[in-house]
Every structure is written in structure tokens, then in C-alpha cells.
Length: 114
Length: 109
Image (cartoon, rainbow over all chains, first blue to last red; front, side, top):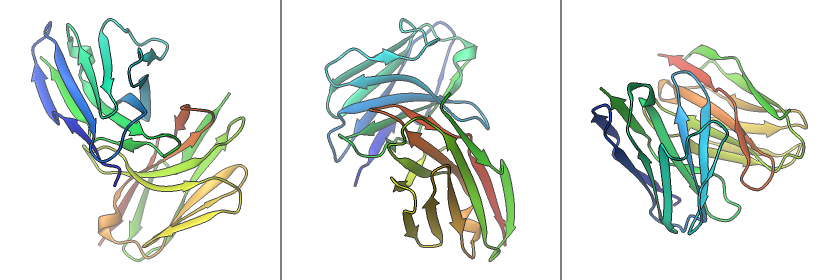
């Protein structure tokens, strides 16, 4: 149980284009979803928290106009990186929880911006 | 300031050589401590939740314990397939989670 699916697993895009990453909870309803960014040998850096049907809450220093988060249903959240630049290249991971459950993570998306 | 520190940063063990990973925390109001396993290029996989000092959880060769200031992940007779990065996280309030930087475990056959 508690499976979170994230797609795509890898994406390469050109500088200036946008890319969308999907995160789905497959067997539970995710009241809250989280988006993280992970740098090599570093901890998970929380980017934003979203509740279904509400606007996402972004962490300090994360540009909300650049990283668009939509949590339209209890099983789907999307992260769109707009006008991507090489410095946006990173490993993005989503997680989801239902009520008071632990966080359950997707398998991440490796974004490379050329 | 709420903080989670994991040690050691990296650990190399011979197959069968038991050891422990440490997660120390300074938070105001612990509402759960979580252990995850992360394989390279993958998302973290949930292992355990601990809520109160003295609590212990076990799964196969792993055993997690909790005190008021730290948690240990004990690995008994590890196998090469236990090689991964182990992350701990603490929940403070609501949806506020703090993660450590992980311990990279390598088990040598």
C-alpha cells in the first residue's frame, strides 16, 4: 500500500522551455502533497506543500512563478518548471500523505536543462 | 532552531558486521521520527515510524530505537543488498518535517 507514482523519471529540456512533472497517489487519497529538490549528497530541500484544491505554500526562496504547483485532485499534483535554466537541473521528488500518515515518496524525476 | 543530524555520513561494513546509524534531533515538540531507505536515483522508501522514547520497531535485519534526543537504526548481519542511504526525518507540527542528510551505507561482500 501507499504507492506514489512520479513521471517522468528522467527529462531533458532546452533552456527556456517548460517541463511538467506528475505525482500520483495510486492507492490512497493524498490530502497533502510535497515537492522536494535533492542535490547530490544533500538532504531533501522542501520546495512547497500543497493541499487538494488549495494554493500551494512555497518555502522561502522558492520562486512560485517559476515552479508552478497544482494539486487539482486528491490523487494528483503537478510541478511545472517554467522557463527552465541549467541551474534548475536537479532531482525533484514528490511525496504524499493521507491524514496523519508518514510521507510516502515517488521515485523522483531527474531534470537536465541544456 | 529545529535540527536533525545524522552520523556517520558514510559507513562501510563487511557483510555480517553489525553496526548502528545515529539520528540526533533538537526540535520543539516531536510528533514522530521516521526512517527511510533511499537507493541511488530513487525516492526514499518508508521503513519505520517512532513516536515516543523507548519505542522500538523491527523489520528483517533493521531495528529502530528512539530516545528523547536521538534514534538509532541498528543493522544486524548486513548483506550487500542493504547498501543504500538511510535518511531520518522528524515531524514537528502539522506538515512540518525536517530531514537529516543521511548515512550512506556500503556493505562489502
